[in-house]
Length: 237
Image (cartoon, rainbow, N blue to C red):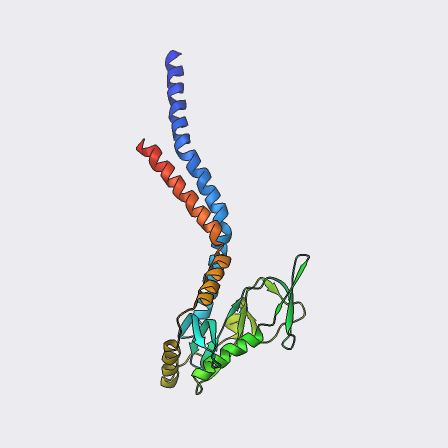
């Protein structure tokens, strides 16, 4: 009987030590996973959107600053080279219900019980097209706005707005040989890129933080580091 009690005591101490080693690690990793879920989901959405854009042509540029032809500059998110010309494809990460039309200066967004107003993005798209067309007057330049699948347009949407899920059907570019003229124009476009100024760097940084929930990502990484540190200390001890 004494031997049984002694063995049971030894086992309890053994499992208690293992619990103290692995229990906090499991808890910290679960917390890190919960915190990073939103950031990971948004990151996967971004990767899906950019892969969808890149597949449209033979080459793509992501985030480039260009002169706008009027002593200013524009920051363009996506430009794609296809056999039919050069396409400008910025992404608008709308969500909720959107009321929009080509000739309305202010659009409306409804999220839950709240309503918001924002500027019609089509004039901005026209400015992008004009900036590239000014640089490349001899090639075909067109623009479309890609919108995320989280947005709903119950009253219809402008033709130049394309949901990301409908890119293959709406932008079914014919595969073909890209002409030498287009290749040369593409090289000229890349060479015309300007260094990002402070405002543009801030805009890009803000976008990265918003799309990836950077603060939650930092906290989750910190929790993982703490878990690894605890595990190393327990095993070393």
